[in-house]
Length: 331
Image (cartoon, rainbow, N blue to C red; front, side, top):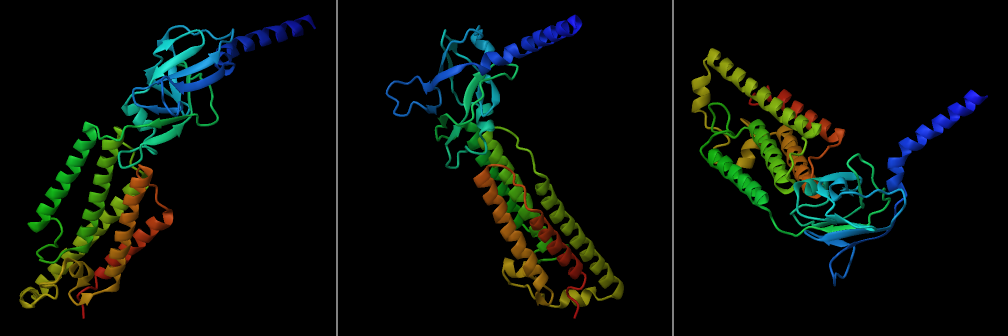
C-alpha cells in the first residue's frame, strides 16, 4: 500500500512538472490586444510598421524574460521573424512589418491584385510552440496596396515571356505541323497550357515571395497536352511516310489546301476535309478549362486542385481527338 501511494505521488509530481511550461501560457488572461497608435479609429486594425500590444493580468506562473524568447503567433503559426520588441510586467509588444513570411502565410487571402486585408487569430508564445490559443479572429491586418520590387519583376518576366512567345509564333515556330503551313491543334493546346501554368506560377511567386507547390492536377493537365502533342506528331509522321511509299506526296502537295487564307480558328478546327466535331470538342473544353484554371488562381491565390471529372473530361477529349486523327483527311 505504501509503495502504491509512493508511486502515485511520484507520478503526479512528474506530471505536474511536465505541464508547467504549457500552463504558463494557458493561464494568461488577456485583457486587450490593440494597436499602439493614438487616434486610430479601429484599435484592432493593424497596418505595416504598427506596434501591437498584448495586455494581460500578470499570473504568478508566467516567467517573461527577454523579448527574443517570445514570438508572434498568427493563426496558430509561430512567426520566427517577429520576436517581441519589448516586455513589461503586464504587456508584450510586437511590431508588424512587411515580410515574405507574413505574406506567404496569408497568401490565400492577401495579394496585390485587389485584396489587401484579412482577419487573423493573433497571440504570442515561445520558440517551443507553446502559445496563447485564440478561438476567434481578433486582429485585422491591412497590407499597404503597393507593388514591391519582386512584383514588378514578376510582371516584367510574364510580359517578356508573352512577347517572345508571340514573336516566335509570327515566325512560324512552335505551332505549325511538320512540313505544313497549317496550325496544329495539339501544339496549340500544349502551348496554351504551358503559357497558363508558367505565367500563373510566376504571378503567385511575385506576390507571395514563395515558390508555391505545383498541384498534381496541374502536372496531369500538362501531361495530357504533352501526350496528345506527341501522339499527333507520331500520326502525322506515319501519314507522311505512307504517302511517300505510295508515291502520292507530289499529288498531295499540288492540291490546294482547304486552310489556305483561312483564320487561325478555322485551321485548328479543321482537317483536310474541313471542320470536324472532335476538334471542336477539344478546343471548347481546353479553352473553358483554361479560363477556369486562371480564375481559380486569381481568386484563391494558389495552384488549383481540379475536380477529377474535369481531368477525366480533358483526357477523354484528347484521346478522342488523337484516336480519330488517324482517319482525318480520308474520303
